[in-house]
Structures are given as structure tokens and as C-alpha cells.
Amino acid sequence: MVLFFLQISRGIYYVKRIKNDYVLTEGKVTFYKTGRGKSRGEVDYDFRLNNKWASNINYEGYFVQIPDEKPDTTINYLVIYEKNLPQNSFLLFNYPIKEKDDLLEYEELFKKGIPNNVFYN
Image 1 (spheres, rainbow, N blue to C red):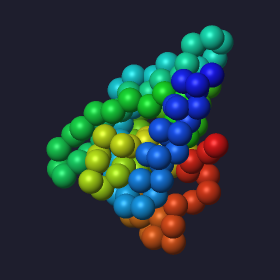
Image 2: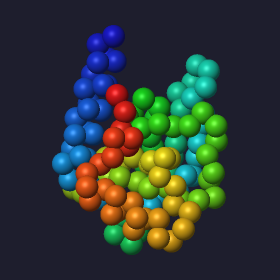
Image 3: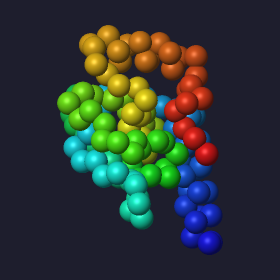
Image 4: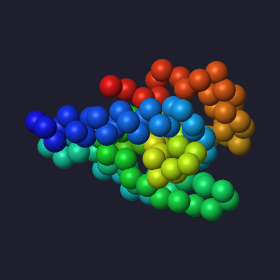
């Protein structure tokens, strides 16, 4: 039980850090595992960082939704990361990048602040 609360507290801390100073970029799913049943959902992804690619993993329960059904892995998705700590990042399945202008549209949307549907809990 204590471990659970420590994980939640840690997650809240990192989400707050992203909200204070974030960058948006595009990312590509490299591995997906559903969270149905007893296992925990997982998504591995690469994301563009200063014209190079970096990698990260998000697990279910880390303040972003990981879909139960396998997402389209042929397209990119929006990634939000902390400017000074890029490994503090999340791939956002609810913001697919299907057209070349999608990233620009999301950047414009996020100028008003991070939308309510980005993080949960």
C-alpha cells in the first residue's frame, strides 16, 4: 500500500514538472502491450529530440491513457516532455499526427495551456 502511494506521489511530481515547462514533439510507437487482464499496459516509443531520436516507456497508470485495443502503429502521436528532463515524457494517443500540419495545430492548441484530456488522475 505504501509503495502504491509513493508511485502516485512520484507521478504527480513529474506531471507537475511537465506542466511547468514542456515541449511538444512527435513520437512513434515501437512496442505496445495491452493492459487487459492481470498485466499492466505498456508502450515503448521513440520521439524527436533536437533533430535526433530518443526512447522512453510509459506504463498504464502513469497519468496517460494506454488504449486496450492496439493503436495504429503506422502513424505518429504527440509527445509531451519536460524541457530540461526529456525522459520525463508521455506519448499521447488522443493526439494522433496523421497530416503534416497536425503538430502545428497541436502546438497552437497547447499555447492556451495543456488541455484537460491530456493527463488523468
